[in-house]
Length: 421
Image (cartoon, rainbow, N blue to C red; front, side):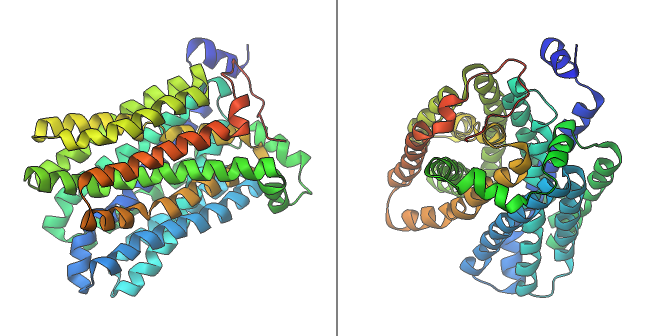
C-alpha cells in the first residue's frame, strides 16, 4: 500500500505531507498577516506622513501589482529550479521588506517597500499550492487546499491581535518589525521539506524545455486554453473583489448604519473570519465529493443572494450572524481555486499558473474598494449590494462555460494531473 492509498483510507499523513501542510498553511497565514498590517496601520500612516486617503489607498494597489509581478516571476523560477528553494526566497523577501517599513522616512519609501513585499508574497502563494498538489492525492486536494487557506485567516487574526497590543503602546512602526516572524518559517522549510517525486520526474523529463514557452503552450496557445485561463482569472477577480468589499467597506457601512463603535466593527471581522473558515472546510469537502461545478455553483448563487441580507442588520447580534453567513459562502470558495488550477494545468507550470491567475485576481479585484467607495458616495446600500451580487452571478455564468471544469469529476486515489490539451 503506497503513501497516497494510506492517506486516502486511514487519514494518516506521512511526515513530508504534514510538513508541507504546516509550511503552506503558515506561509499563507504570515502572508495575510503581512498584508493586513497595512490595514491596521493605515490611519496612523496617513497622519504621520500627512497624506490623503487617496494617496494612502495607492499603497494597497501597489502591493497587489507587486504580487502579480512576483507571482509570475517566482512561479516561473519555482517551476524551473524547484518549489522548496524558491519558497524560502519569497518568504525572505516579504519578511525583510515588511520589517524595513518601520524605518521608512517618507511615503515614497513605503510605496517601494510595499511593492517589494508584494513581489515576495505574490510568489509564495502558487509555490505553496504546488507543494500541496504534489504531496497529496487529487481526491483530497479540495479539502487540503482549503485547510491551507484557513491558515490565511489565522494570519488575519494574528495581525488584529498584534495591532491591538503593539500600536497603542509602541507605535505603528513597531508593528511592521513583526514582519520578521516568517524568517523562522523559511529556515524550517529549507531544512525539512524535500521536492516531490512528481516534480523531480517532470524536471528530469523537461530539463531542456523553456518554462515560458510551456506556460504559453498550456495557458494561451489555443482558443480553448485562453478561454480557460481568462475565465479562471474572472472568477478570482470576483473572489478578491468580494473579499475586499467584505473586509474593507461592509464593517464601515454597518457601523454607520447601526451607530456602532470600532469594537463592534472588530467583532464583525472576527465573526466573518469564523464564517469564512467554516465555509472553506465545507467547500473543500463539497469540491472533493461533488466536483467543482456543483460546489462553485451552490456557493456562488448563495453569495449572490445573501449579500442583500446585510440590509436586514438591526443590531450587533444580527450583524455578527449575517457577517458569518455571508463570509461562509462568499469566501468559503477561496481555497478551491488552488485545487482546480492545480488539476487543470500540468506539473511543469503549476506554480506559475496558480500565481498568474490569482495574481490577476488580486491586481484587478483589489479595485473593488475604490468602486464601492464611489457607489457609497452616490447611491444607497442596496446598490452597493447589487454590485457585489452581480459580480457573483458573472462568476457563476463564467464558471459554467469553462471547458476544463466540465471534465473535472470527483477522483478516487488519482495522482495524475488533468490538463486542457
